[in-house]
Image 1 (cartoon, rainbow, N blue to C red):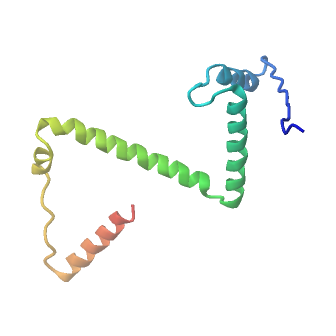
Image 2: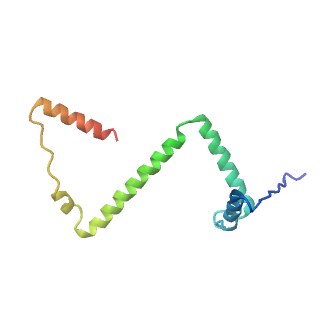
Image 3: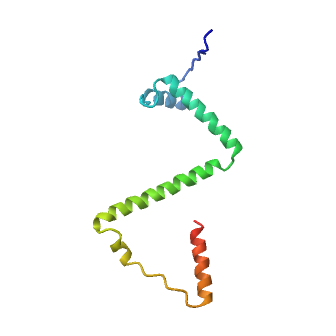
Length: 122
């Protein structure tokens, strides 16, 4: 007895969402998905697995967005540093940065510690 189930999908190309799905399937990477069946199966599994994770973790989407934002910041900084490297490395960049003064009084030390704690919270 065969374990294969056949399912037909009807797409109405007059509807934007249906047409978009059709275009994705027509232009999909055959290196990633061997067939339309494999692409549809993968998409369905990913969609419902994500919905299930979201139902168990209401902050998942927020954390994913924050992680993506931080990744963009890291990439931008890395690209900027790489662009500056041929111009003599980090030394010219650091020469214009003033040194952090040592705290002279206990109040200055406390305010400096508070400022550093705040900066580290990011």
